[in-house]
Length: 268
Ligand code: GTP
Ligand code: MG
Image 1: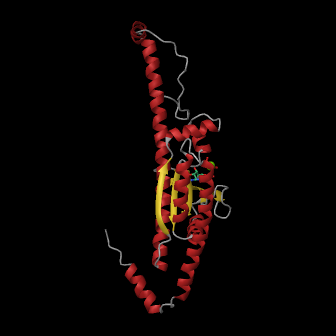
Image 2: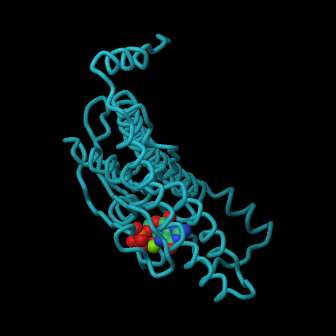
Image 3: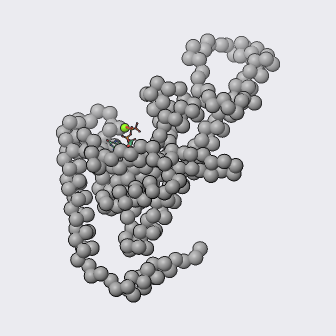
């Protein structure tokens, strides 16, 4: 059995393996020493695969933790203000092929240590809000939680990318509690409005198409759309605030009755 501390994932087969005939292969396979070598190698690979799957499972648990945190914030906000700040949440684990590509681009080998230390988006969660102010509200509420550690914050809403991309990106660490210990796992959080998400999906599609005629014109058009979306997001928020300001403040009794109705949660 390989050492448990060996965190190397063997993905390397020599590219210059000599061609062998069926007779030579039969001869090789009848050699117990060679068979035992194959067996050891196969066991090593299986061991590495188990370790990688375990790591993926930890990232998947971290995603569940963060998703639940956002769902709780949404539920609480709905009870308090009768409005859901979160329109939808989606999660994904990075595909192994993309992990290997990313490490190769960074000039790093593929093993458990390089994955954990260099791939900050193994676990990704995208939270879609209706309004811009809700993005900051839920991001700040998440970051105030004492088991969350902020690793990196990139505000592409405040400072959009050159192509027009807007989103709030956070890399956070969250503990995953296991039977005997806990593991701090990194999660990439992307928070944006419905309109920003609409834009990003289309722009993403374009990025992965090979040769697009009029690419420059499309890039410019997308930049224009991003600026219209920015303006629309800001106007929608201003309208919501005007409506809220114009509404009569409910009486204390009305607030209590309203909350009671919303707290009438069916027991499962
Ligand atoms: P990677 O892009 O993950 O290598 O890291 P980075 O340091 O560039 O991180 P960044 O926070 O800029 O981007 C992380 C993720 O945000 C990407 O993987 C995309 O999902 C998304 N993203 C960033 N920029 C763009 C963009 O211009 N267009 C779209 N559609 N998505 C983007
Ligand atoms: Mg990038």
